Length: 530
Image 1 (tube, rainbow, N blue to C red):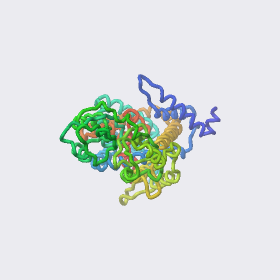
Image 2: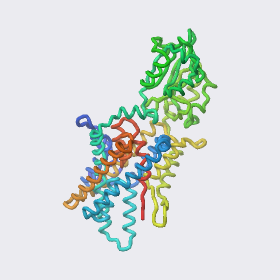
Image 3: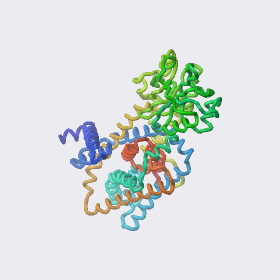
Image 4: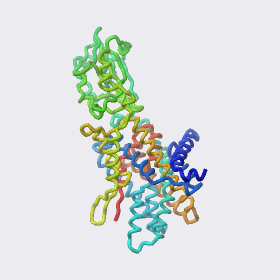
């Protein structure tokens, strides 16, 4: 078996992934480590036989695919967040890097470690491979440098890297209990700012309030800042679809859709809940979910399609992945969306043809746009960006694809080229990329990690553990209590590695940690060389 594993890296790769996923799915007191266990299973395989190695391109491929996919997925939300909280998020992201660096510098003076050892601990705890590579390159190209400095750097980085991942997870678990974080409350507060699961419901309301009679729906929504949609309207025996200029008469019945709190507020103003479930009346209007699989429409807003001029229909909600969203005029459609229409029966088949309505087509990946965009990201990552005579930044295999992914994700399309991915395809690519990344890190560092364990290494391990936990705890506390950043976003900001992001997202139950990770990844994944 040893010979097979040594000579067949692909077999080794998928064996580690499958075993890691299996172990990660086991629950202890209702908790599990999830896909992050792929890393630790990889470390175990590397310990069993240091000759087990996975090619470096697997690590680079996994890292770049994972990061680029996250960039495409979170690009629009990322730039929206910066427009809303730009200086706060930018300042805090750089504070994370500087604060961790200051703690590492303090260890240099207090504990007597060499500069190379402290640099390795800092790069390892922050899992910043570009920073490690930059320091190693600096040491090897500095006149008078010795081999011992390079060895100190490699050993301390190897010891600190897995601690950086595990320590971040421990800090998250610890601080959510100490700070008594209410994820459900944060979800309610942020669901209108980010495309999260809105827990949508509907109600049939009878108009009894004289003050809103004759007022168009547009004015009602603007005056009351409602986040709801209107559906069928029954006036006497006549049934019609609501429009922005629709106004109600006393005794009319209207279907409204939104979150429970929004529905309650709208019902209180409009009148009272009705027992007349007009949504069940499908003699004239019917409803259907239609897959958005037409690439020509992807990346466009609902308003730009001018649907009322083409069909007697309205869009009430959109299901993207596992999340239901209210449909608004500025909602951008993506491949794979399941769109709920209310329309005339004869228009439903036309709408189906117009939007494609093909699950197979909606799941396909545009290999040209994905490959070209990722290539641009990798190219950007290799460039050294000068900031001065002795200072330059290099984004690396993580920062480059992330920056390009964020930009292209926000653009969504350039002429006929659609940059974004169908939701299901994005999830699969992220999973594949993350598995490749974790397995490669674990297997290739397992042997060195356990070989480095000695009496002398105990101090490095203790320092790395202290740095990771202390920086994580203080940053979470300062960000949550003083800067007032939602804890769900903070989890992504302190996540120093994709495995931690995935763990945080699973714990929160939405993609807010991914947004936080994207916000701070530029400064954290940039490498400063001098």
